[in-house]
Each structure stands twice: as structure tokens, then as C-alpha cells.
Amino acid sequence: MGRFLFSTAECRCKKVDPKTRLNCGPPGITPQQCTENGCCFDSSVPGVPWCYAAAPPTYKEVCPTEVKVRKNCGYPGIPADICESRGCCFESRPPAVPWCFYKVLVAEGNKKKPLSLLLLEM
Image 1 (cartoon, rainbow, N blue to C red):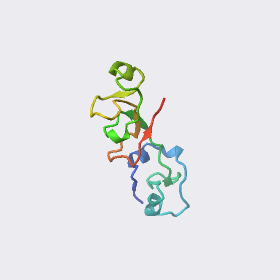
Image 2 (cartoon, rainbow, N blue to C red):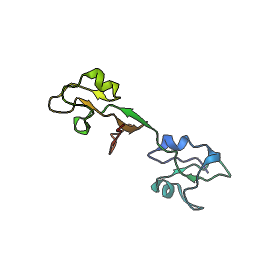
Image 3 (cartoon, rainbow, N blue to C red):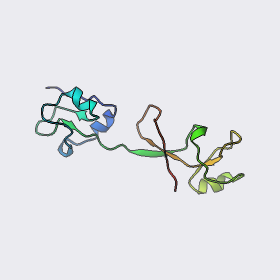
């Protein structure tokens, strides 16, 4: 059998050491059935699960580019240096939206726009 990786999280599949794979399907599961369940499939290594769970995603903090996801982290007229000393983002435009706002968490390696953003409030 060959190697198959059909997953939206393909890079997370590659991060899993074959010795640490967590089984994600019954014996005889097909690559298609495996990946339809959100799992990884790799039949190139004997003696380990071929259908297995992907590595958990990693996240990074970023300043949101979309104004509608800004969550206020300051007060009207807050200076940029004070805002940034709080660990927040500062952008003085457009008017009538928070200029000092929290960073958001996004999954690393996600080339598509995330369906949702987790607000990081510290």
C-alpha cells in the first residue's frame, strides 16, 4: 500500500511521529473514511495506526486587520505607547472604532480566512 494524506490539516498530520500516533478508526478503514472523520491516513509505516489523530493546531497572536473584530482594550484618546504597553494593538483609523484593541489568536499555517477568531483578553 502507498502513503495517503487527505486532510485539511495535512501539515498537522506530518508533525505526528509514527510511534506516538493515536488511533482514529477501526481496522480496515479506508483513507476516504478516515479523512472524512477529520483524521490523517498514512499506510507507509507498518505496526502503527494508519488512521490517526492530527497534531493539535498551534496558534499565534496577531493584530486583526478586520475592523469588525476589534474589541476595545483602552479608552478614548489612549496614546499608542500606553495601548501597546498593555500588549494590545493600536491603529488610529478609521474613526468611530476602537483604536486600541486586543490581539486575536489564529491557527498557524492557515492560509484561508479563519471561520472564527478567538479573542485573547488578558
